[in-house]
Image 1 (spheres, rainbow, N blue to C red):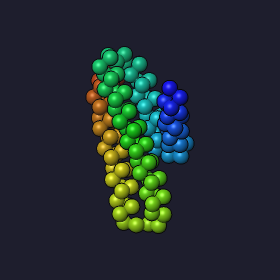
Image 2 (cartoon, one colour):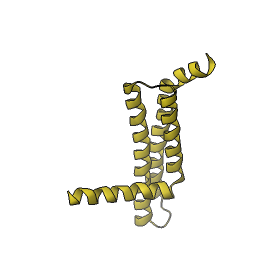
Image 3 (tube, rainbow, N blue to C red):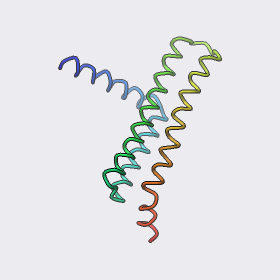
Image 4 (cartoon, rainbow, N blue to C red):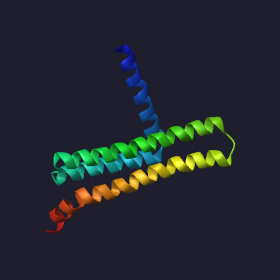
Length: 120
């Protein structure tokens, strides 16, 4: 049990590092909070919540993996190198895809009931 608790501490340290040092991570956290607030506002059903929360988890996880790749590349290649750039760009691209699809999911799930709530 002690090892498990220690592992949780390491994981929290990573989450905290990403939130403190990465502005895009903070943007994703704010977007997640807004999505959850809107979900409560429009009374999402359990399956809709599951999809929204899974989307949030994918984006935040992708951003954290991007941060990990950037840190490892910076350590391995402190000088600018074309392969290091590719690794960072690909990781950033993964975040962009996850975020863009999450926005579409949010619009599909939260958009119609929010529209109805505001304009009907």
